[in-house]
Image (cartoon, rainbow, N blue to C red; front, side, top):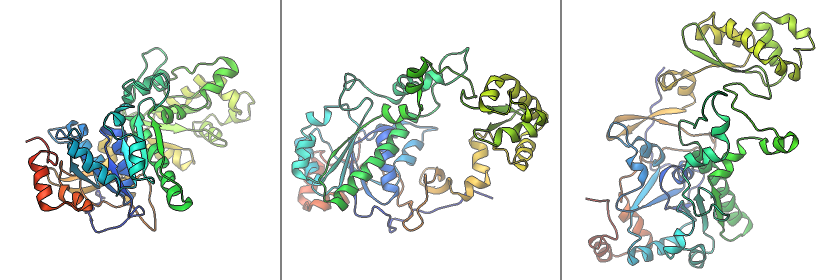
Length: 409
């Protein structure tokens, strides 16, 4: 099998047809949020400075692959908000919008003369989603808030890695991505309230740290119960055995998780230790945790006799939850990823075809679509300003003044 090829279809419609989003955000969190809305059919207008979204500068081999992914399905308006004419034009667009997304440091929007109070006077039904590292209130609100800091302070790095080594950060923008999806959920809820309950617009305070902290589970409750601080426990888990990564004889790896009965018993049976399943010291969660090292050694030694493919097939035939550890070269070739269109090929003006992640879920009646590729700065200027009825003379004057632009030249 090969990666499915898809084409951009600007004439398609999605579930959020008729929703217009003004996107003032930069980098990952805001762009993830607005990508989710754009994939669902919202008209997302990226409002960009002459330098453009900072994400455009995250390049590999001279190509801005991050921007091509998170900028898909959006339009770009090159608008200089440092000029009063730019701010006034933006306010006119606010009147025609459903959502505004920003991820400035708290207080920045107010300094620009675009506080929620000002915006809601223009458009009382506007949903304003504000993403920041630490939230709009609290003692840390004015701190810079990049995802790396959040991944450290929320306990993720402290719990990630091996007991005898330093804390480990995730290899990608996890905090930003999770916050983007969380912010999209809240934005959709606020839109529903406007559309179905006759509600007014509101402000959504989406911090980076809150959704990531929730992913760390009941650590606060555990600490209050017994003073327990979660320690780095490599690839195992304190609450269940067996769980972890296991090396195969071809120097590859498989993952295994047996988090609920009868899975642990199946694993113990599969590795030739079935007699222990009748031993009360091994046939309960508490007992297996007490014998963690022994049980994990059984599995490690057994799996090391097989290559990766053999190990996966062997345990799957015994209805044990196991999967291979993949890198991107294997993901691209995997038939399940291809059939689910978790990765697809799309036309690209620099790469010819670009393999791009698909959609996080699938809607049967109003499916997400690939409407358009990530735009160039100011690519849709004239299309967008037509929404507020600017004359040709006004447009030319704004272009000459640099209020409307297509990036730095």
